[in-house]
Image (tube, rainbow, N blue to C red; front, side):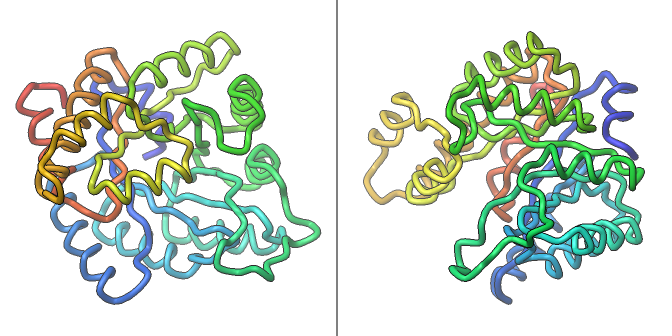
Length: 292
């Protein structure tokens, strides 16, 4: 199933989850448990991340293979920054051999754990370059990432959104949006992108709040604004009550998803952080309201 064709042919929004390769055996066990629980919800597709500089090349491939064996539609991320052309085709050939039809093309970051990392001199500096390279060589349905609040490295949101238009011009047929805690960021982002001529589906990403430390760290890395409403809500909870924080995160994400779905978004993409509990409850509530 190619996702661009799926969104063209259906009226019902898609449900999808993101997973990332486990870093150790304990994490692998938690990931397998999360997959078992979330597969039961029958998502339309799942995505698998790809580490900066190809650092998770083998584990990403193994996770894609596992999910394909579970008969799931997989959106395989590909972060090509710093990789040589032959490394790029090696990864994509392996995905094609697994039957992957959908690839999310992102630039990727410099590996933080490798201070000696040097990008290959023939590597590609931007996602648009990767899309231009991949498009004539493969039959994948290609997507790209979008940033409702602007990429953390962009000089302005307008510049970043102009880059998004370039990515769609270079072959991206859908956009998966970075998460946000205020839906107004997403709605404004879509409006501005449409004005620029971006007409492909723009699927909002939703990140439940799992704990305060993770929320703060991810927001700093991703450039997501932690709104005053979120901070006040968390401050009102009993200090140190992890269950209360998780419940607050579920409630916030459910309200976000409900508003987005009522506004007619093409789908909801939940960033699970390889955990099932919050996503299970969010989907249960949305389906109880007839929104998914």
